[in-house]
Length: 405
Image (cartoon, rainbow, N blue to C red; front, side, top):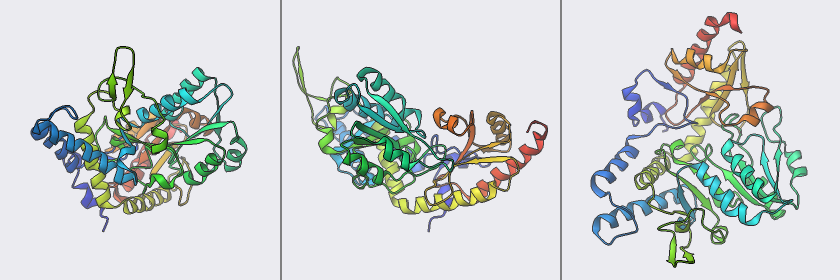
């Protein structure tokens, strides 16, 4: 049985903050004891640099690091040599944009994005477009908070070289039909890049079934530590990519005038990696696989439906995003004309932690006609009682700010 109250006991943060209602997991999730212990064990027993020595300590560290790569691969349904360790999804998307985009895009080529993208999946492509002369186009978002699929069909063309989209919106909670859209892009000869920062922690993901070519994730959003993430790349695509960074560990042979490079994934992991963080990410993947990602997703779906029902009864509350099976555990909202920062401060007085701002999605907020929003996001340790606390705190905030709404 999936019991969030029992799961919550695995997370020391809640024992140390017993009154905390943490509803900001979309920004960064809390960490279970198993992840903390795995990183501590590495530092206390096995710390040494990896891939660089023949002594036992270094070999144990290397084994732990590469074992973590295998765990992430299993989590994504991928092959181990397709997993590149990076710092976060932002770095993964930059790697794809710069290593592929700068070497394959030309003036007049088109980069197709969407209006619901996080800045991490917008700015790298803007930088590449400015250097190559490629043109950026974006699929609009409907009033319900879904991608306009008719517009997608009209925007996708023979000039489209890259289609890059989020699998799940960090504001709307919308889960996009990636496999269907990526298949259409492939028919036009375009590669597809998927920002999985929000989806990978919550959905069962099998990258080879998505028809995509790259998939990015951040460890700290899926119970792992900060400073660790992964880029999955289709093997035949990775093999053709030049390095993103140069230095030690990513080479075969170095001469003064030129170098040859290691095969993927080592080609993209220059320098000493974040060893403990990768091990922590592997432990997080283990924890989630033990819970079962189908169970995680079912819990998210049940909780967000409960939350939307309860929040809909709060007067003056404006909710964003769709209702339906394609909605994940994220709820963005505004309370009348009250600034979301003021609202979040009031909620914090009642022990409820939510995110405020534009959530690194300014174009989407313009589409929503909102400067900013508050956001509650759920995860494996979130409960209906957390939602009830949020609703009660919102009602009290509405009473307090009645003259400002």
